[in-house]
Length: 286
Image (cartoon, rainbow, N blue to C red; front, side, top):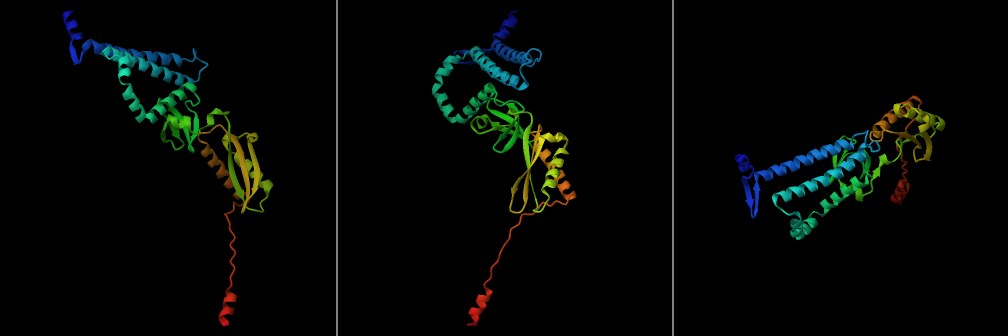
């Protein structure tokens, strides 16, 4: 018994009036493990569908992230108190330093506050599809300072949270499941307009995701310089991979236009040249 007491009382490190003993390390380790276990229990409880069936995964994720940050802040405070560092004294004594650090890390703090806003407000959630600076991104993770997304080229993108909260961001997932998209097509002058409309609609409806012809609309929109312009409007649930759907429809359109002898014209420009060679020769003769 005396041996155990000597082991736990063994002094590992001393700094000023504070001494780090073996039992202090045991307490710190206990706080760390207790925090991990507590977070595991909270996560399991939140994700139990039979208990919180009114939440979807995105809402549950946001709530858990906020709880996790709060618990870790409390745990770190307890660890500092265990070591002998008074948190209140530490904060008060380092106020001037914190101001300097805050000015240097202003953008970082801005990202952190933006992360808290995103998690609390839940305007952006997991698996939401965003359009940011012209890039389409599927959100995979919302962190305290940055969020991680996947673009259409399957490239992982790290996004500062302030970029989402301060800039104009289009959230494609906030509307109904079906989103309307369009494809523009131009055909040569002299083409049968009614036949073109039929070919374009049949091409869209032929795609497996657009079986319902009520979801497809074809319009004759413009007399352009070198073409008659048409537009196909259709609805699709495949928002993130819509470029693949558009590509498939364009291939079908091209095939059907060729089958029906309908031409997609090249851009044309008429160039008129006016020559005064006759007048030049006359002047030389005189």
